[in-house]
Image (cartoon, rainbow, N blue to C red; front, side, top):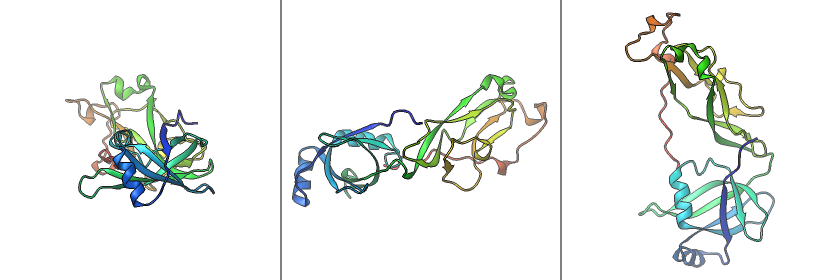
Length: 217
């Protein structure tokens, strides 16, 4: 199971419509609505500074949140939309969707590498190059893995770890259908592939270089 799901604290909002929303913003809050889960929509408001900080941290829309609203039971939600001011690009409204424990969602799960000391390539001075520190997986809201563990035992210089070589947590699957690189062990400066005892080289088209995904917000 996943580690602690981050809290998103909100207040219940009275009044609807453009006038009430403008008043909420004047109070330093961002109006929003929670919908889904076979329950009536719930109007909420979140302190602007708190929401802005969360958005700047990135991955707001792909994070599962534990929504806490006084007077209501905690509920797991995921953000479906954040409306922004067209000039200032600041959040003006957000939509949150309630999730059942069986709901399938796509989330970024962190990758953990273990047994570096058992990797011959690293012992020779090779460098573990992490291409994807997180992998986006489809999983159920009630059974989100805390991390993906990758065993480096036996890996040599120029060996590549792809998603197909990883034992993923039960009940999960990647959002990307094709095989892709998560990490590789690259040769240290001054050491060519021919210096490796296996004498194997990796073709350039076998190694995918993927930049960090920009924060959605």
